[in-house]
View 1 (cartoon, one colour):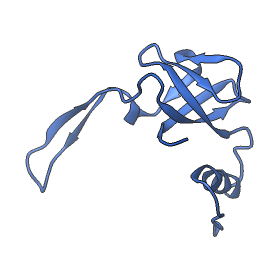
View 2 (view 1 turned 30 degrees about the horizontal axis):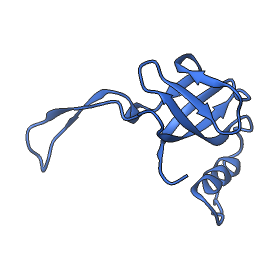
View 3 (view 1 turned 90 degrees about the horizontal axis):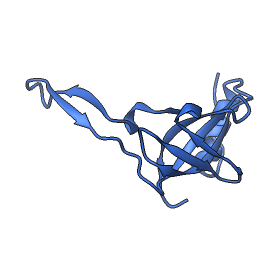
View 4 (view 1 turned 180 degrees about the vertical axis):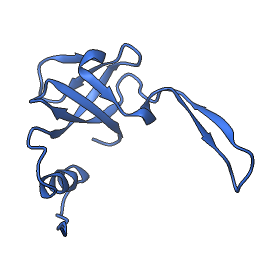
Length: 112
């Protein structure tokens, strides 16, 4: 099924793709601000009067402390440890699910 790309921001394009793929009618992409870092993370979603904490959130792995194995040009595999990548006042993109009862933290963003 071909997906027609729309003009506009990355948010508008992502929303268009999700809608074209048929669903997730209960999912919305929004912006938020980190109020407290991991592991006791708290965020404030724009235009929402309440704060959300770790129990309300699913955090994308690349934003958490984790280890990955990598090799460069066929060299010996090496473990690389990544630190948590969310700090106070970071702007983030989130996907709301279950009518805003839970949020998936997608990524950090800049300039919004």
